[in-house]
Image (cartoon, rainbow, N blue to C red):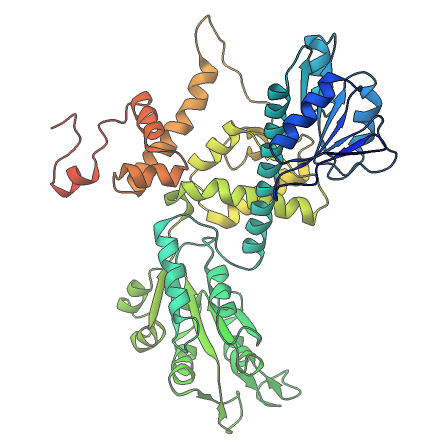
Amino acid sequence: MLDVMGVSVNSGRRPGLPRVQVCLPRGGEREDLLDALEAEGWHAEALDALPGGRLEADVLVADARGSDALLERLRSQEDAPDVVLIASFGTIQDAVSSIRRGAFDYLSRPTSPAHVLHAIRRARAARELRSENERLRDTLVARAESGEPLSRDARMRRNMEIIERVADTTASVLITGESGTGKSMLARSLHVRSSRAQLPFVVLDCGAVPPSLLESTLFGHARGAFTGAVKDKPGLVESAEGGTVFLDELTNAPLDVQAKLLRVVQERTFERVGETRTRQADVRWIAATNRDIRREVSEGRFREDLFWRLNVVSLELPPLRERPGDVPMLVEAFVLRFAREHGRPARSVEAAALSALCAAPWPGNVRQLQHAVERAVLLSDSELLRRDDFASELGLQESSPTVPQLGAGDGALKRALEEPERELVRRALEACGGRRARAAALLGINRATLFNKMRKHGLLDFPTASERASGHGSRASA
Protein backbone atom coordinates (compact mmCIF):
# COMPACT_ATOMS: atom_id res chain seq x y z
CA MET A 1 0.00 0.00 0.00
CA LEU A 2 1.33 3.45 -1.01
CA ASP A 3 0.84 6.49 1.23
CA VAL A 4 1.11 9.80 -0.58
CA MET A 5 0.07 13.05 1.16
CA GLY A 6 -2.18 11.23 3.57
CA VAL A 7 -3.98 9.22 0.89
CA SER A 8 -3.49 5.46 0.87
CA VAL A 9 -3.95 3.82 -2.51
CA ASN A 10 -4.21 0.11 -3.24
CA SER A 11 -2.58 -0.45 -6.63
CA GLY A 12 -3.60 -4.13 -6.83
CA ARG A 13 -7.30 -3.51 -7.36
CA ARG A 14 -9.31 -6.51 -8.47
CA PRO A 15 -11.69 -5.79 -11.42
CA GLY A 16 -15.34 -5.44 -10.48
CA LEU A 17 -14.74 -4.53 -6.83
CA PRO A 18 -15.80 -1.09 -5.59
CA ARG A 19 -13.77 1.98 -4.90
CA VAL A 20 -13.96 2.73 -1.17
CA GLN A 21 -13.05 6.02 0.48
CA VAL A 22 -12.36 5.91 4.21
CA CYS A 23 -12.73 9.26 5.96
CA LEU A 24 -11.97 8.37 9.59
CA PRO A 25 -9.58 9.85 12.14
CA ARG A 26 -5.97 8.65 11.81
CA GLY A 27 -5.28 5.70 14.04
CA GLY A 28 -5.66 1.98 14.45
CA GLU A 29 -9.30 1.81 13.41
CA ARG A 30 -8.60 3.40 10.03
CA GLU A 31 -5.39 1.42 9.42
CA ASP A 32 -7.02 -1.90 10.32
CA LEU A 33 -9.87 -1.21 7.91
CA LEU A 34 -7.50 -0.21 5.11
CA ASP A 35 -5.48 -3.40 5.67
CA ALA A 36 -8.68 -5.48 5.50
CA LEU A 37 -9.70 -3.75 2.27
CA GLU A 38 -6.23 -4.32 0.82
CA ALA A 39 -6.38 -8.01 1.76
CA GLU A 40 -9.53 -8.36 -0.36
CA GLY A 41 -7.94 -6.50 -3.28
CA TRP A 42 -10.26 -3.50 -3.11
CA HIS A 43 -9.30 -0.02 -4.21
CA ALA A 44 -9.20 2.04 -0.99
CA GLU A 45 -8.38 5.66 -0.25
CA ALA A 46 -7.80 7.10 3.20
CA LEU A 47 -8.97 10.71 3.53
CA ASP A 48 -8.22 13.10 6.35
CA ALA A 49 -11.05 15.33 5.09
CA LEU A 50 -13.64 15.12 2.36
CA PRO A 51 -12.70 16.91 -0.87
CA GLY A 52 -14.95 19.60 -2.30
CA GLY A 53 -17.10 18.89 -5.31
CA ARG A 54 -18.27 15.54 -6.53
CA LEU A 55 -17.39 12.36 -4.61
CA GLU A 56 -16.34 9.61 -6.99
CA ALA A 57 -16.29 6.61 -4.65
CA ASP A 58 -18.71 3.69 -4.78
CA VAL A 59 -18.80 3.48 -0.97
CA LEU A 60 -17.79 6.10 1.60
CA VAL A 61 -16.98 5.10 5.18
CA ALA A 62 -17.10 8.19 7.35
CA ASP A 63 -17.26 9.27 10.97
CA ALA A 64 -20.78 10.09 12.05
CA ARG A 65 -19.73 13.43 13.53
CA GLY A 66 -20.73 16.21 11.13
CA SER A 67 -22.52 13.78 8.83
CA ASP A 68 -25.62 16.00 8.52
CA ALA A 69 -23.85 18.27 6.02
CA LEU A 70 -22.39 15.28 4.17
CA LEU A 71 -25.76 13.56 3.72
CA GLU A 72 -27.40 16.80 2.63
CA ARG A 73 -24.62 17.34 0.10
CA LEU A 74 -24.95 13.86 -1.36
CA ARG A 75 -28.71 14.21 -1.82
CA SER A 76 -28.06 16.48 -4.81
CA GLN A 77 -25.32 14.30 -6.37
CA GLU A 78 -26.39 11.90 -9.05
CA ASP A 79 -25.03 8.39 -8.50
CA ALA A 80 -23.74 9.39 -5.07
CA PRO A 81 -21.68 6.86 -3.08
CA ASP A 82 -23.36 4.68 -0.49
CA VAL A 83 -22.43 5.97 2.96
CA VAL A 84 -21.53 3.82 5.95
CA LEU A 85 -21.33 5.92 9.14
CA ILE A 86 -19.40 4.95 12.28
CA ALA A 87 -20.43 6.63 15.54
CA SER A 88 -18.80 6.72 18.98
CA PHE A 89 -21.95 7.40 20.98
CA GLY A 90 -24.73 6.75 18.51
CA THR A 91 -28.29 6.00 19.58
CA ILE A 92 -31.02 4.07 17.80
CA GLN A 93 -32.72 7.39 17.06
CA ASP A 94 -29.50 8.71 15.48
CA ALA A 95 -29.19 5.59 13.34
CA VAL A 96 -32.81 5.80 12.13
CA SER A 97 -32.47 9.51 11.39
CA SER A 98 -29.23 9.03 9.42
CA ILE A 99 -30.62 6.19 7.32
CA ARG A 100 -33.76 8.18 6.57
CA ARG A 101 -31.56 11.02 5.33
CA GLY A 102 -29.64 8.76 2.98
CA ALA A 103 -26.98 6.79 4.87
CA PHE A 104 -26.80 3.13 3.88
CA ASP A 105 -25.71 1.85 7.30
CA TYR A 106 -24.91 3.19 10.76
CA LEU A 107 -22.43 1.30 12.97
CA SER A 108 -21.60 2.01 16.61
CA ARG A 109 -18.14 1.72 18.13
CA PRO A 110 -16.56 -0.51 19.10
CA THR A 111 -16.76 -2.17 15.70
CA SER A 112 -14.39 -4.34 13.71
CA PRO A 113 -13.06 -4.34 10.13
CA ALA A 114 -15.14 -7.46 9.51
CA HIS A 115 -18.37 -5.63 10.43
CA VAL A 116 -17.47 -2.66 8.23
CA LEU A 117 -16.55 -4.96 5.32
CA HIS A 118 -19.90 -6.70 5.70
CA ALA A 119 -21.68 -3.33 5.47
CA ILE A 120 -19.63 -2.42 2.37
CA ARG A 121 -20.52 -5.72 0.70
CA ARG A 122 -24.20 -5.14 1.46
CA ALA A 123 -24.01 -1.64 0.02
CA ARG A 124 -22.37 -2.97 -3.12
CA ALA A 125 -24.96 -5.72 -3.51
CA ALA A 126 -27.80 -3.22 -3.06
CA ARG A 127 -26.27 -0.91 -5.67
CA GLU A 128 -25.91 -3.75 -8.17
CA LEU A 129 -29.51 -4.78 -7.52
CA ARG A 130 -30.70 -1.23 -8.14
CA SER A 131 -28.72 -1.08 -11.38
CA GLU A 132 -30.10 -4.41 -12.53
CA ASN A 133 -33.66 -3.33 -11.71
CA GLU A 134 -33.19 -0.11 -13.67
CA ARG A 135 -31.78 -2.05 -16.61
CA LEU A 136 -34.69 -4.49 -16.52
CA ARG A 137 -37.20 -1.64 -16.29
CA ASP A 138 -35.62 0.09 -19.28
CA THR A 139 -35.71 -3.20 -21.18
CA LEU A 140 -39.34 -3.71 -20.20
CA VAL A 141 -40.36 -0.26 -21.46
CA ALA A 142 -38.30 -0.68 -24.64
CA ARG A 143 -40.00 -4.00 -25.37
CA ALA A 144 -43.44 -2.48 -24.80
CA GLU A 145 -42.69 0.57 -26.96
CA SER A 146 -41.30 -1.60 -29.77
CA GLY A 147 -44.62 -3.42 -30.01
CA GLU A 148 -43.46 -6.66 -28.44
CA PRO A 149 -46.19 -8.20 -26.28
CA LEU A 150 -45.21 -8.56 -22.64
CA SER A 151 -46.24 -11.99 -21.44
CA ARG A 152 -45.14 -15.06 -19.52
CA ASP A 153 -48.12 -17.06 -20.76
CA ALA A 154 -47.22 -20.24 -22.67
CA ARG A 155 -49.79 -19.48 -25.39
CA MET A 156 -48.40 -16.00 -25.93
CA ARG A 157 -44.86 -17.35 -26.05
CA ARG A 158 -46.02 -19.86 -28.65
CA ASN A 159 -47.47 -16.99 -30.71
CA MET A 160 -44.11 -15.20 -30.60
CA GLU A 161 -42.33 -18.38 -31.69
CA ILE A 162 -44.66 -18.63 -34.68
CA ILE A 163 -44.07 -14.97 -35.51
CA GLU A 164 -40.30 -15.51 -35.48
CA ARG A 165 -40.71 -18.39 -37.94
CA VAL A 166 -43.04 -16.69 -40.42
CA ALA A 167 -42.07 -13.01 -40.08
CA ASP A 168 -39.80 -12.98 -43.12
CA THR A 169 -42.25 -14.74 -45.44
CA THR A 170 -45.17 -13.48 -47.50
CA ALA A 171 -47.68 -15.76 -45.75
CA SER A 172 -50.94 -14.10 -44.73
CA VAL A 173 -51.71 -14.15 -41.00
CA LEU A 174 -55.07 -14.15 -39.21
CA ILE A 175 -55.16 -12.97 -35.58
CA THR A 176 -58.18 -13.66 -33.39
CA GLY A 177 -58.98 -12.59 -29.86
CA GLU A 178 -61.21 -10.39 -27.76
CA SER A 179 -61.07 -6.62 -28.08
CA GLY A 180 -58.11 -5.14 -26.25
CA THR A 181 -55.97 -8.28 -26.14
CA GLY A 182 -53.24 -6.72 -28.29
CA LYS A 183 -53.99 -7.91 -31.83
CA SER A 184 -52.66 -4.73 -33.41
CA MET A 185 -49.51 -4.93 -31.26
CA LEU A 186 -48.93 -8.51 -32.40
CA ALA A 187 -49.42 -7.46 -36.02
CA ARG A 188 -46.89 -4.65 -35.65
CA SER A 189 -44.47 -7.04 -33.96
CA LEU A 190 -44.76 -9.34 -36.98
CA HIS A 191 -44.06 -6.43 -39.35
CA VAL A 192 -40.98 -5.12 -37.51
CA ARG A 193 -39.41 -8.60 -37.51
CA SER A 194 -39.78 -8.95 -41.27
CA SER A 195 -37.59 -7.69 -44.12
CA ARG A 196 -40.40 -5.17 -44.78
CA ALA A 197 -39.79 -3.43 -41.44
CA GLN A 198 -38.45 -0.23 -43.04
CA LEU A 199 -41.44 -0.01 -45.39
CA PRO A 200 -45.01 1.14 -44.55
CA PHE A 201 -47.22 -0.53 -41.98
CA VAL A 202 -50.74 0.57 -42.92
CA VAL A 203 -53.70 -0.06 -40.59
CA LEU A 204 -57.35 -0.05 -41.62
CA ASP A 205 -60.10 -0.58 -39.03
CA CYS A 206 -62.85 -2.04 -41.18
CA GLY A 207 -65.43 -1.23 -38.52
CA ALA A 208 -64.54 2.46 -38.43
CA VAL A 209 -65.08 3.14 -42.15
CA PRO A 210 -68.61 3.32 -43.63
CA PRO A 211 -69.21 0.26 -45.84
CA SER A 212 -69.86 2.51 -48.85
CA LEU A 213 -66.38 4.04 -48.53
CA LEU A 214 -64.44 0.93 -47.58
CA GLU A 215 -63.62 -0.12 -51.16
CA SER A 216 -62.30 3.29 -52.23
CA THR A 217 -60.39 3.61 -48.95
CA LEU A 218 -58.61 0.33 -49.69
CA PHE A 219 -58.12 0.55 -53.45
CA GLY A 220 -58.43 4.26 -54.22
CA HIS A 221 -60.66 5.87 -56.83
CA ALA A 222 -60.56 7.71 -60.14
CA ARG A 223 -61.81 11.25 -60.62
CA GLY A 224 -65.57 11.27 -61.09
CA ALA A 225 -66.04 7.73 -59.79
CA PHE A 226 -68.69 8.99 -57.38
CA THR A 227 -70.01 12.26 -55.98
CA GLY A 228 -67.18 14.07 -54.26
CA ALA A 229 -64.40 12.26 -56.15
CA VAL A 230 -62.89 15.44 -57.58
CA LYS A 231 -59.47 13.94 -58.31
CA ASP A 232 -57.66 10.64 -58.60
CA LYS A 233 -56.73 9.24 -55.22
CA PRO A 234 -54.64 6.18 -54.35
CA GLY A 235 -55.87 3.83 -51.64
CA LEU A 236 -54.20 2.25 -48.66
CA VAL A 237 -53.01 -0.74 -50.69
CA GLU A 238 -50.90 1.54 -52.91
CA SER A 239 -49.62 3.56 -49.97
CA ALA A 240 -48.43 0.33 -48.34
CA GLU A 241 -46.47 -0.83 -51.41
CA GLY A 242 -43.68 -3.16 -50.33
CA GLY A 243 -44.86 -3.13 -46.71
CA THR A 244 -47.73 -4.57 -44.69
CA VAL A 245 -51.48 -3.98 -44.66
CA PHE A 246 -53.22 -4.76 -41.36
CA LEU A 247 -56.98 -5.16 -41.66
CA ASP A 248 -58.41 -4.84 -38.16
CA GLU A 249 -61.92 -6.16 -37.43
CA LEU A 250 -62.09 -7.61 -40.93
CA THR A 251 -65.44 -9.33 -40.33
CA ASN A 252 -67.10 -5.88 -40.56
CA ALA A 253 -66.27 -5.71 -44.29
CA PRO A 254 -69.32 -6.24 -46.57
CA LEU A 255 -69.36 -9.28 -48.87
CA ASP A 256 -68.73 -7.31 -52.08
CA VAL A 257 -65.56 -5.82 -50.61
CA GLN A 258 -64.54 -9.27 -49.37
CA ALA A 259 -64.70 -10.53 -52.99
CA LYS A 260 -62.28 -7.82 -54.13
CA LEU A 261 -60.05 -8.47 -51.13
CA LEU A 262 -59.87 -12.14 -52.12
CA ARG A 263 -58.58 -11.16 -55.54
CA VAL A 264 -55.88 -8.80 -54.30
CA VAL A 265 -54.72 -11.24 -51.59
CA GLN A 266 -54.70 -14.17 -54.00
CA GLU A 267 -53.60 -12.60 -57.31
CA ARG A 268 -51.95 -9.39 -56.02
CA THR A 269 -53.89 -7.27 -58.52
CA PHE A 270 -56.65 -4.67 -58.15
CA GLU A 271 -58.29 -1.64 -59.79
CA ARG A 272 -59.19 1.69 -58.31
CA VAL A 273 -62.90 2.42 -58.06
CA GLY A 274 -64.10 3.84 -61.41
CA GLU A 275 -60.94 2.79 -63.26
CA THR A 276 -60.17 -0.14 -65.58
CA ARG A 277 -56.38 -0.12 -65.26
CA THR A 278 -55.13 -3.15 -63.35
CA ARG A 279 -52.43 -2.44 -60.76
CA GLN A 280 -50.02 -4.71 -58.91
CA ALA A 281 -49.91 -4.95 -55.11
CA ASP A 282 -46.75 -6.10 -53.35
CA VAL A 283 -47.93 -6.15 -49.74
CA ARG A 284 -48.05 -8.56 -46.82
CA TRP A 285 -51.56 -9.17 -45.44
CA ILE A 286 -52.43 -9.44 -41.76
CA ALA A 287 -56.06 -9.55 -40.64
CA ALA A 288 -57.67 -9.57 -37.21
CA THR A 289 -61.12 -10.00 -35.72
CA ASN A 290 -62.72 -10.21 -32.28
CA ARG A 291 -65.57 -12.36 -33.60
CA ASP A 292 -65.84 -16.12 -34.04
CA ILE A 293 -64.86 -16.01 -37.72
CA ARG A 294 -65.71 -19.67 -38.34
CA ARG A 295 -69.26 -18.96 -37.20
CA GLU A 296 -69.33 -15.91 -39.47
CA VAL A 297 -68.37 -18.22 -42.35
CA SER A 298 -70.93 -20.90 -41.46
CA GLU A 299 -73.70 -18.28 -41.21
CA GLY A 300 -72.80 -16.73 -44.56
CA ARG A 301 -71.49 -13.37 -43.33
CA PHE A 302 -67.90 -14.03 -44.32
CA ARG A 303 -66.54 -15.64 -47.47
CA GLU A 304 -65.07 -19.07 -46.84
CA ASP A 305 -62.51 -18.72 -49.66
CA LEU A 306 -61.21 -15.45 -48.18
CA PHE A 307 -61.05 -17.02 -44.73
CA TRP A 308 -58.85 -19.86 -45.94
CA ARG A 309 -56.70 -17.47 -47.97
CA LEU A 310 -56.01 -15.25 -44.96
CA ASN A 311 -55.79 -18.11 -42.47
CA VAL A 312 -52.46 -19.47 -43.77
CA VAL A 313 -51.03 -18.79 -40.30
CA SER A 314 -53.38 -18.26 -37.35
CA LEU A 315 -52.63 -16.67 -33.99
CA GLU A 316 -55.11 -16.68 -31.11
CA LEU A 317 -54.67 -14.24 -28.23
CA PRO A 318 -56.03 -15.38 -24.85
CA PRO A 319 -57.91 -12.78 -22.79
CA LEU A 320 -56.07 -11.12 -19.91
CA ARG A 321 -58.29 -12.81 -17.31
CA GLU A 322 -56.79 -16.16 -18.39
CA ARG A 323 -53.21 -14.97 -17.87
CA PRO A 324 -53.18 -13.11 -14.54
CA GLY A 325 -49.45 -13.71 -14.20
CA ASP A 326 -48.90 -11.11 -16.94
CA VAL A 327 -50.61 -8.33 -14.97
CA PRO A 328 -47.66 -7.36 -12.70
CA MET A 329 -45.27 -7.06 -15.64
CA LEU A 330 -47.78 -5.07 -17.70
CA VAL A 331 -48.57 -2.76 -14.77
CA GLU A 332 -44.89 -2.02 -14.17
CA ALA A 333 -44.27 -1.32 -17.86
CA PHE A 334 -47.30 0.98 -18.09
CA VAL A 335 -46.40 2.85 -14.89
CA LEU A 336 -42.88 3.55 -16.17
CA ARG A 337 -44.13 4.49 -19.64
CA PHE A 338 -46.81 6.93 -18.52
CA ALA A 339 -44.62 8.44 -15.81
CA ARG A 340 -42.14 9.34 -18.54
CA GLU A 341 -44.76 10.48 -21.04
CA HIS A 342 -46.59 12.77 -18.59
CA GLY A 343 -43.60 13.95 -16.58
CA ARG A 344 -44.78 12.27 -13.40
CA PRO A 345 -42.49 10.69 -10.79
CA ALA A 346 -41.96 6.94 -11.03
CA ARG A 347 -44.38 5.19 -8.68
CA SER A 348 -44.73 1.79 -7.10
CA VAL A 349 -47.94 -0.21 -6.73
CA GLU A 350 -48.91 -1.49 -3.28
CA ALA A 351 -49.13 -5.25 -2.92
CA ALA A 352 -52.86 -5.23 -2.12
CA ALA A 353 -53.62 -3.18 -5.23
CA LEU A 354 -51.48 -5.44 -7.44
CA SER A 355 -53.16 -8.53 -6.04
CA ALA A 356 -56.59 -7.04 -6.75
CA LEU A 357 -55.54 -6.05 -10.28
CA CYS A 358 -54.39 -9.62 -10.93
CA ALA A 359 -57.75 -10.99 -9.80
CA ALA A 360 -59.88 -8.47 -11.74
CA PRO A 361 -61.83 -9.84 -14.77
CA TRP A 362 -60.63 -7.13 -17.25
CA PRO A 363 -63.42 -7.32 -19.85
CA GLY A 364 -61.48 -4.72 -21.85
CA ASN A 365 -58.29 -6.78 -21.53
CA VAL A 366 -54.84 -5.17 -21.87
CA ARG A 367 -56.28 -1.95 -23.30
CA GLN A 368 -58.45 -1.46 -20.22
CA LEU A 369 -55.51 -2.16 -17.90
CA GLN A 370 -53.37 0.31 -19.83
CA HIS A 371 -55.97 3.08 -19.51
CA ALA A 372 -56.46 2.29 -15.81
CA VAL A 373 -52.74 2.61 -15.08
CA GLU A 374 -52.45 5.83 -17.11
CA ARG A 375 -55.34 7.40 -15.18
CA ALA A 376 -53.83 6.31 -11.85
CA VAL A 377 -50.41 7.75 -12.75
CA LEU A 378 -52.01 11.04 -13.77
CA LEU A 379 -54.37 11.49 -10.83
CA SER A 380 -52.57 9.98 -7.84
CA ASP A 381 -50.80 12.34 -5.44
CA SER A 382 -49.04 9.51 -3.63
CA GLU A 383 -45.74 7.80 -4.42
CA LEU A 384 -47.60 4.51 -3.97
CA LEU A 385 -50.53 3.59 -6.22
CA ARG A 386 -53.29 2.04 -4.10
CA ARG A 387 -56.49 0.10 -4.66
CA ASP A 388 -58.52 3.32 -4.60
CA ASP A 389 -56.55 4.59 -7.61
CA PHE A 390 -58.09 1.74 -9.63
CA ALA A 391 -61.56 2.05 -8.11
CA SER A 392 -63.67 1.79 -11.27
CA GLU A 393 -61.77 -1.22 -12.65
CA LEU A 394 -61.94 -3.06 -9.33
CA GLY A 395 -65.63 -2.36 -8.79
CA LEU A 396 -64.99 -0.05 -5.82
CA GLN A 397 -66.94 3.06 -4.97
CA GLU A 398 -65.27 6.20 -6.30
CA SER A 399 -66.03 7.90 -3.01
CA SER A 400 -64.76 6.70 0.32
CA PRO A 401 -65.75 3.03 0.68
CA THR A 402 -68.06 1.92 3.43
CA VAL A 403 -65.97 0.49 6.23
CA PRO A 404 -67.60 -2.46 8.03
CA GLN A 405 -68.12 -2.34 11.74
CA LEU A 406 -65.25 -4.23 13.31
CA GLY A 407 -65.29 -6.23 16.48
CA ALA A 408 -62.36 -7.69 18.35
CA GLY A 409 -60.60 -10.27 16.22
CA ASP A 410 -62.82 -9.74 13.13
CA GLY A 411 -59.77 -9.71 10.84
CA ALA A 412 -61.66 -7.86 8.08
CA LEU A 413 -58.47 -6.47 6.53
CA LYS A 414 -56.84 -9.88 6.49
CA ARG A 415 -59.86 -11.41 4.76
CA ALA A 416 -60.01 -8.58 2.25
CA LEU A 417 -56.39 -9.14 1.28
CA GLU A 418 -56.60 -12.92 1.20
CA GLU A 419 -59.53 -13.26 -1.20
CA PRO A 420 -57.71 -11.75 -4.25
CA GLU A 421 -54.67 -13.90 -3.46
CA ARG A 422 -56.79 -17.06 -3.34
CA GLU A 423 -58.45 -16.20 -6.63
CA LEU A 424 -55.07 -15.49 -8.25
CA VAL A 425 -53.67 -18.85 -7.11
CA ARG A 426 -56.80 -20.69 -8.27
CA ARG A 427 -56.69 -19.03 -11.68
CA ALA A 428 -53.00 -19.85 -12.10
CA LEU A 429 -53.65 -23.51 -11.29
CA GLU A 430 -56.58 -23.58 -13.67
CA ALA A 431 -54.64 -21.87 -16.47
CA CYS A 432 -51.78 -24.38 -16.08
CA GLY A 433 -54.03 -27.44 -15.98
CA GLY A 434 -53.13 -28.21 -12.36
CA ARG A 435 -49.39 -28.29 -13.09
CA ARG A 436 -47.95 -26.81 -9.92
CA ALA A 437 -44.48 -26.08 -11.27
CA ARG A 438 -45.97 -24.07 -14.14
CA ALA A 439 -48.45 -22.33 -11.85
CA ALA A 440 -45.63 -21.35 -9.49
CA ALA A 441 -43.59 -19.98 -12.42
CA LEU A 442 -46.64 -18.09 -13.68
CA LEU A 443 -47.06 -16.45 -10.26
CA GLY A 444 -43.33 -15.76 -9.89
CA ILE A 445 -42.94 -17.89 -6.75
CA ASN A 446 -41.34 -21.24 -5.97
CA ARG A 447 -43.25 -24.51 -5.57
CA ALA A 448 -42.90 -24.53 -1.78
CA THR A 449 -44.50 -21.09 -1.54
CA LEU A 450 -47.28 -22.18 -3.90
CA PHE A 451 -47.93 -25.28 -1.77
CA ASN A 452 -48.16 -23.14 1.38
CA LYS A 453 -50.61 -20.77 -0.30
CA MET A 454 -52.71 -23.67 -1.57
CA ARG A 455 -52.88 -25.06 1.95
CA LYS A 456 -53.67 -21.63 3.38
CA HIS A 457 -56.56 -21.08 0.95
CA GLY A 458 -57.95 -24.63 0.96
CA LEU A 459 -56.80 -25.45 -2.57
CA LEU A 460 -54.84 -28.62 -1.87
CA ASP A 461 -57.66 -30.67 -3.40
CA PHE A 462 -57.21 -28.89 -6.76
CA PRO A 463 -56.58 -31.78 -9.19
CA THR A 464 -53.00 -32.18 -10.38
CA ALA A 465 -52.08 -32.72 -14.02
CA SER A 466 -51.70 -36.48 -13.49
CA GLU A 467 -55.09 -36.70 -11.77
CA ARG A 468 -56.70 -34.83 -14.65
CA ALA A 469 -55.00 -37.12 -17.17
CA SER A 470 -56.22 -40.23 -15.34
CA GLY A 471 -59.75 -38.88 -15.20
CA HIS A 472 -59.87 -38.51 -11.43
CA GLY A 473 -61.33 -35.47 -9.77
CA SER A 474 -59.98 -33.68 -6.75
CA ARG A 475 -58.23 -35.54 -4.01
CA ALA A 476 -61.01 -34.72 -1.66
CA SER A 477 -63.47 -36.57 -3.84
CA ALA A 478 -61.19 -39.49 -4.63
